[in-house]
Image 1 (tube, rainbow over the protein chains, first blue to last red):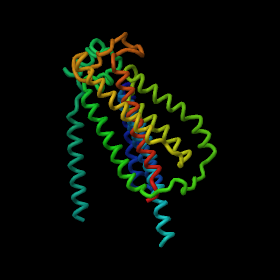
Image 2 (cartoon, one colour):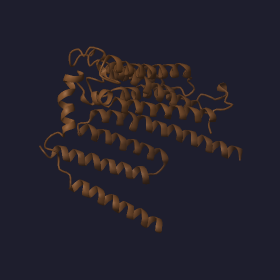
Image 3 (cartoon, chains in turn orange, brown):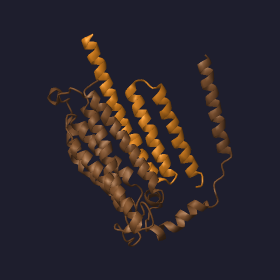
Image 4 (cartoon, rainbow over the protein chains, first blue to last red):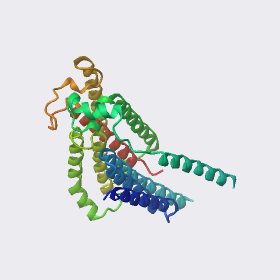
Length: 89
Length: 233
């Protein structure tokens, strides 16, 4: 029973590392942004497991919520700009 | 090649530092004096059931005021920079991008509940995990959902900045009231402490955290709204 917590922490850490690797090496910006959001989500699960629910809530709301959508928002803007440039040039 | 070697050397140094930290780590058998003080005295001194909130709002209240100020500055600078980008922008010119039925209906259904959850989180900050910053971020995520469902929706910047500045002024005013009515700046004992665990308890903590929640929510919302209103760069 005492191995449950370290095992869970190890699993979440491994998932975080895997998501971070996908974020760096993955195909395409959208997948990279999603993977980065997943890293934050795993971090908030980790904080929850380590008995820090206050920090977990902040991480979930800002790290995996607002930041991910902000990045998508900017990605959409940048892509729109690219198309516009091509259209004019 | 040199760059890669430097990066590898840096990584090795980092690995060494973390490895020594990990091998040298032994869990504390008991709380250190500061932590013990907080754990033992919070309920008696401040009447807050959530020790983390008591530390953030009262024991380290000045730090929180600084954090809120930093966030305010960030929101102000984002607004300033994006207002420059939105120069000469006509609101009627942009076409509304197609949004799925699922998103529109889901937004109508979810936004009130998310707003309620945000308010619950910051009003109950002294009892349950969470508080002003978390609640504010949840409220901002409701605003984000509204913006996703209708990217052309216009939020009143005047209303947002009125909420933001009013909350900020009241926060500092409560802090100054603590100087005169209680033990010092941002002391929560200007109001009766009440019974531990009740909604109206812990003195000024629920009031301060609600103000922080409104302020943070307004700041994030104003950032999102001005980002969505910028002309495509």
